[in-house]
Amino acid sequence: MPDHRPDRVPLWRHLAMFRRDILSTQPARLYRAKMAEVKLPFLHSVMVNTPDLVRLVLQERPRDFPKSDRVREGLRLLLGNSVFVTNGPVWERQRRMIDPAFEGGRLRETFPAMWDAAQAGAARLSEGEVEIEEAMSHAAADVIFRTLFSLPIEDATAAEVYQTFRAHQRSAPILNLAALIPLPRWLPRYFPRATRATAAHIRKLIAQMVDQRAEEIAAGTAPDDLATKIMTTRDPVSGETFTRAEMVDQVAIFFLAGHETSASALAWTLYLLATHPDWQERLAQEAQALRPFVDSGIAPDFGLLRQFPLIRDTFRESLRLYPPVPMLVRETVQLEEFRGRKLGRGAQVVVSLWHMGRHEAVWDAPHEFRPGRWQDAATKACARDAFLPFSSGPRVCTGAGFAMAEAVLILARLLSDWEFRAVDGRAPVPMAHMTVRARDGIWLGLSRRGPSRSAQCPPGSPSA
Image (cartoon, rainbow, N blue to C red):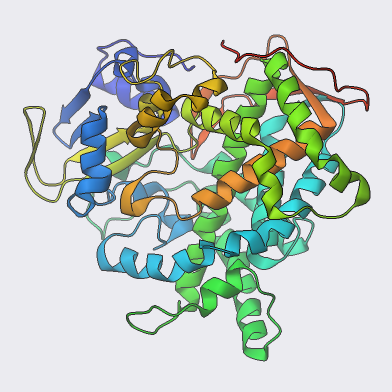
């Protein structure tokens, strides 16, 4: 867990801490609180920490709590007007055109590309100490390029997008000043030169891929992947398809959401398994169902994922403890009252996925790693309103099923070949940047699994 600030600190110190990391600026009492309020001359914000308020904001009255305009301040250079930051009729139109690409049999159709990426990811690892966040970023980016544009990460343009995005992450400030202090639209926003340059270069590369795909669609030679599906889907209301500029925005968020969040979740899951070796061995046994396909070179069918229930539950537990997106920020469009506190129009309403996943009034042993809890009816009841790694309600992540399938497959593939162990003196410290990452990376020791490692492992569920 991150360090926590004292309950009371001077405003200047709080802002300085906030610019470095969002998680460590939160007091420990938020793991117990029902609501928290910050009231400043330029910011009125409440964090809602009870299932009933979360349900109200995300599910029951989502139109009264749209995405905060402040959220887009730090993301607009890269994401433009993508579905992640829009509201109202614009967002509704975008979702009508994006959702069909992730429905029904489309996930099954993308599975062979996921398998190829998982195979490549396992092959890229090596024995010794490895910074696993970087390795998982590479693997997750490979999945996105293969499923979106039918390109492996080794493709020159795909590799350039990936490397430029890593540079963009390093240069982008955690918090833009305009996210705290509302500024008029005409006033220029300051971004570091490297941040502006990397965002512009990524969007230029994406535009080139979109243009090439448009030509292939016109010629009838386009592969049947996600990009083709999204670019050819017409809005059932207007009959229009995405324009070139709109498609560049959407591909940018697919890459950010589909690559960065998956990489974060996979890395933290492997860290938890490295620190719980008995549980890791149980999962490695389950993953041996992949061996016939690995050894024969024949891709498995999508239905094979049903053979990995423990891996799926472990990934859920990791998402509960380390949600890739730590907080959702909405804003009020009218006067509201939460728990006796009055909120004016434009107040910020924060749903902290980090604190809801660890809330002491909701979960049993909330800070402990217990993947076995997901077999309990009580846990599944809690999960309806407190387990929100993909948000909930109308704005639930359209790629949630895609992300779960990708994660289970990659984890099974890695565990079938590799053993992960913690490195002494290198415990990772979580911090929130674009996603929940480790301050100095997550370093794990890797060694290959021998063919004889099939002994029965002790039953039971681990706890930390």
